[in-house]
Image (cartoon, rainbow, N blue to C red):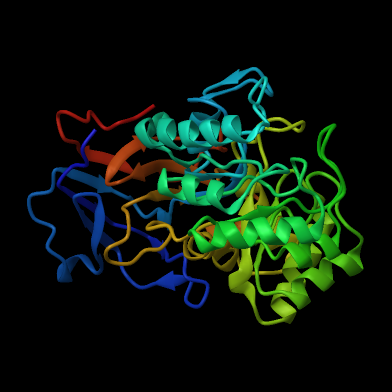
Length: 400
């Protein structure tokens, strides 16, 4: 579906920028052209005439669409791990508009030979490029590296369009020196890497401790709070201190360890390194509200302003992952979540309510300038809900 040529969102009550250095923006209106942000600020200063899509935010907050930095998709909107369909659509109703695969590891009979794993990665990259479940952008095709791979294999993958590695450590490559060589080959050809951190997640995986993580030097310290089992506290703080790579905290991990990692990042004055994921589908299931729950948990128990924590799931991830969404600034993809305080929730406003540990209500999601969902079926009902005043005839609002 092509993006509507002009989108106007007016009467915005609060603009969350996604920028950890400046989480809030002044303004009450946003204009997007052909799926990209064209301007944000005061309505009187923007060209708001003749929109194809007009949204009255009705005082709700506009945030960049949330990005789940760690998922394990398989095919389409189905996961055999939990025998669940439409799990990605459910996450859209939790404000998630982009997902990043950490490996398509739950495919029954997943090939582990080099030809097969490369073929699977290329196929996965293609089918999620060609099909977006409910409009959600799924960045997939993340091969799990295995013994015997050579530099040419990474070159072949990159030339075929693969941009991610699955979690290092989920396959037969578990030694730090071997992982370091393959991560370096991947980086040489523009493929970003994530390493499994902590105890084994499923039979066949193993412990990846701080020494392996530091030696491998992957781009993202995957689930630093364990997926599920976290490393000892001293190893977590050591990882934060001794490298400058991404610090990924996930819903499927240890919450106390996640708080420790976040606090350490702040002590190091490096909050821009913190990103969020769910690590689902997995043994813990699918958490459609997992990213929102992480935001509320880290803000309330970590005493960090909600508007800052929201940046972990938006702009921090976008910058680290090289995505064109996640930030409210001109030229970025028009991917948004319109949210408000949940009905009857405590707190003087939405941000205060989140800082007390409460989830906000999602009233609408927009991807590439098209409305993809309206009042969420999964979050608590919001006090105020945006109104789709005008929609392009062909799109019909794009609701699911």
